[in-house]
Amino acid sequence: MNERKQLMLAVYRAGFALDDATLYLDTHPCDERALEYYNVMKRAYKKAYNEYTAKFGPLKINDVDVACGNWNWVKTPWPWEMEGC
Figure (cartoon, one colour):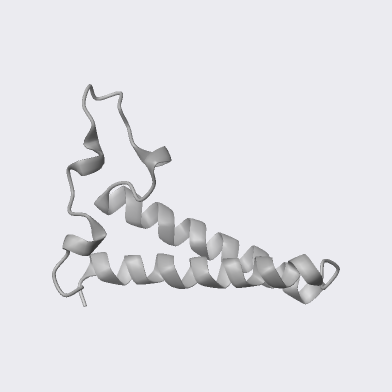
């Protein structure tokens, strides 16, 4: 598996865990272990997300830099255009 796929998988996994923890905390807001897990997963997601976007470009529209004078969102392959997907 190449680096791009590994980083995208890390983003997916951490994002899923973060969403799952969020849903759990909606019904168990005082669970300290769950809050700790949420914070760990939030850091893991941010780390994976930031590493991916630094190396391979934006994942979300908020990451697009238009200061360069053009629309750079479409300069890299879309997730479904990558080989082996």
